[in-house]
Length: 221
Image (cartoon, rainbow, N blue to C red; front, side, top):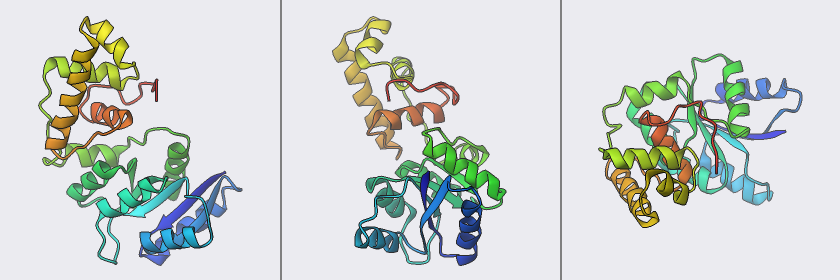
């Protein structure tokens, strides 16, 4: 069973998703449905409820919060976040992805696609769909980190799941050199607003930049 929280300031959207989840026969259980992230976090603490496995979050809420704030609060709380939006603001979508959202599903998509996306994310799979690709490719602000050829080689191997020592051995360089490369790669991504503090984040950046096939099986995560 996957525990799901629905956060959207449009009640009709939430009710539709609640009904759809209820029809999954217990596969998806809605543990919260409300209009703000703050309301969700307050209820979770009040009833001592563990964090939802997956939060389906609207890109823009009516309480004045930013998508970065909302995504970061939810991921820090232990949930995976899917953005459910009309996806007509690529910069905001990119901001959500940079903050840690695992993907985006358009509100124009069939309800079945939303449910499938929730199940994929709950299973630890990447959610690289058309909306995700459009947000990345259609927004010029999704800047190139300008990695060197060696840095690209290091990132490709490391993001594929190899330990850093194995990366160094395969490229015939010292471990300290490979480590310095990873540090420089992270700095370059920070400089263009695409932070990658974890190995999983680096894998996402490698996929975004075409260094790693999206269907490559993850190893070492």
